[in-house]
Length: 106
Image 1 (cartoon, rainbow, N blue to C red):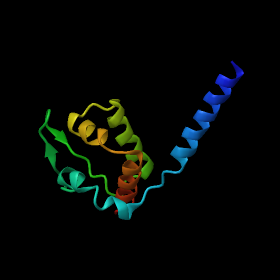
Image 2 (cartoon, rainbow, N blue to C red; image 1 turned 90 degrees about the horizontal axis):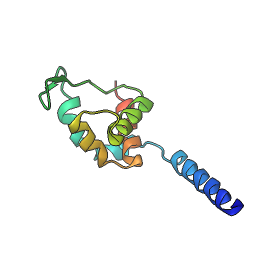
Image 3 (tube, rainbow, N blue to C red; image 1 turned 90 degrees about the vertical axis):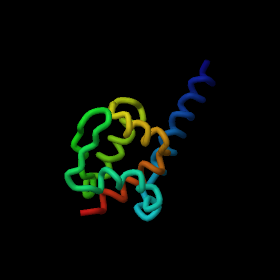
Image 4 (tube, helix red, strand yellow; image 1 turned 45 degrees about the horizontal axis):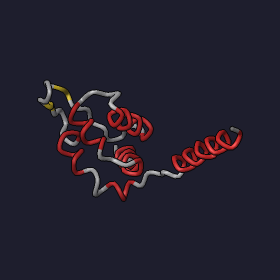
C-alpha cells in the first residue's frame, strides 16, 4: 500500500513539474493565432452564434487571464461553443504561447 501512495505522489509531482515547464512563446504563437484574429482582432465585432455576443478585444490582457479562460473553455467550464471547440484543440503549450502573444500587445 505504501508503494502505491509513493507512486501516486511521484506521479503528482511529475505532473506539477511538467506544468511548470510550459512557458509561453509569443513568437511561436504567430502561427497559432489565425483562428483568433477573425473575431478578437476586429474592434466592436459581434458574433452571432449561438446568440449575438460582443467579442472582447484580448490584446494587452494578462497572460494568466487568457490561459485561465482558454483552459475553462477547454474543460467546458465556460460555455461558448465556438471558443470551446477552438480551445479543445489546443495543447497546454499552445495556450501558453497564445496567452503570451496577446499579453504583449497594447
